[in-house]
Length: 120
Image 1 (cartoon, helix red, strand yellow):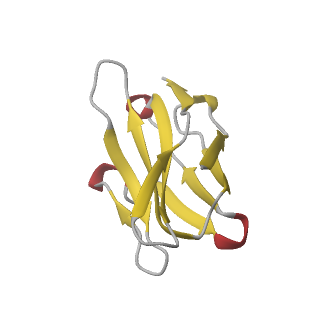
Image 2: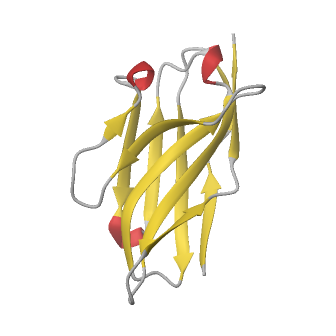
């Protein structure tokens, strides 16, 4: 079993910055892609960014240039640096980690979510 613990959410004024962290622990063989999604009140969950184990990062267009995803493989941790935050970035942010099992197969695990509130 794999556990994900998120941190770093909170209340920030528009134009401010926050850095989210998500640390994975437990029965981890190999971590493939790590990523972040978010869900605003009354809206569907949407992808924010992904970072493969050895490839290029991917972002939703509306977040390019403001958000940066990164990872520390030694710590099994993924980060999301969010700059120039806007009111519409208010949402619960969820991390996800794709873990490769020794016997084959890839399993996706989700964090518990962390609230980000941007005041206008």
